[in-house]
Length: 157
Image: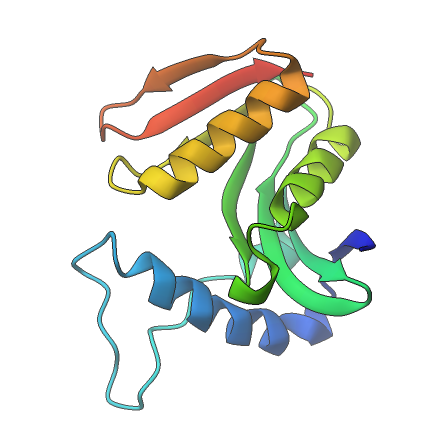
């Protein structure tokens, strides 16, 4: 399977917003304050900054040219660490190495200091990121906990 990381163009924002609905639905398992609105959708995710702020980059994950997910990346050229703000792989593509390949590609393209955080309740995400980061860094990373009790992996590439 050919896994690609493709920048999301501004005119493709509606597609990303559609994918965000699936992401928010899955994420609602971990946050009590996510509610469906009267129109049957979740409140739209605030994405405008991803096309107006230089340090924010929206990316599609594609598998054999088909949409498979997305990455919302925060990366700067200064001393601030890079961060994966949101990462999502659609169910048909999970447990097939797609997320791993996508994460590896992002790490390869954006070198430097990194932090990747997960909610304390989201044990599957914690397991995924610890495994992927351990493999990519050959175990050269730290796991920290912030004031919100999120699990955070910190490393340098």
